[in-house]
Image 1 (spheres, rainbow, N blue to C red):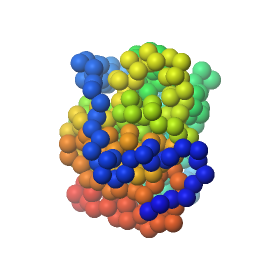
Image 2 (tube, rainbow, N blue to C red):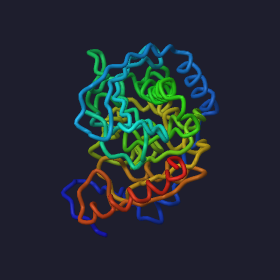
Image 3 (cartoon, rainbow, N blue to C red):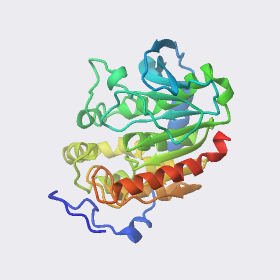
Image 4 (cartoon, rainbow, N blue to C red):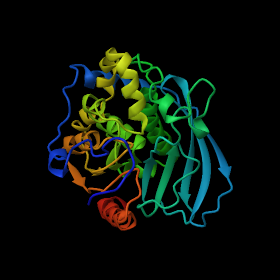
Length: 318
């Protein structure tokens, strides 16, 4: 399908379907796994200091709570916790969000009977604080010159701490814990999943942060453009970005992951998305015509993807 658009660049980055499906991950630094295993260990040793507050909700199918907890470096994370109103908890889900942040929980997950945690990344919404950006363009380059302080480190650690918090309140979901995330949340999920064996399945939609050397060549309207412009005057930043490559991490994921990359995407360059998808050893693949862009078959594809998600997770909710 040829999509009409008014961008001054090509949202396919010049790749057709066959070329996208051939993209592999970039070379990784020799201590990539060591860096992330150490980060995971440091995160799990950070006390959660959880605080739970009952909220008024309008969903007749779930009870809603606010759950705050600490993650790596003592960064305070705010989240929404959604619990089935009938009390039948079949599984647990940590749900990431896009780079626009989130103003509440997603009301309709493809998981029956899920107790779900919807954390806000450091700086956004319930996790807002004056010293952190709350917009994608500034957030994605915050402390980007430091491997240890880069904002994506605590953003990834948030996922592990969210899992710890969810399991602390609902230990019965152990062995039935999944991750779902799209765009920003898709990239963070790819970075987080290799090191945390508590997650047993996942869905990553239009994942970002894949194959930085390719992404830096692709103009876009998303957060990657901010990184590309920063890189133009600070090429040494690639030394840090190689540790935050979602495609490099994806090759180390040990659980089944459903991935839905887009062939056309003005916000998240498709080569990076497919680098993530292609690298995952055990994956399901659902190709989208476009991401971050309205197109004629979008509603039907969204419906079809939901059906695939429900089948993907069906063994978890039985």
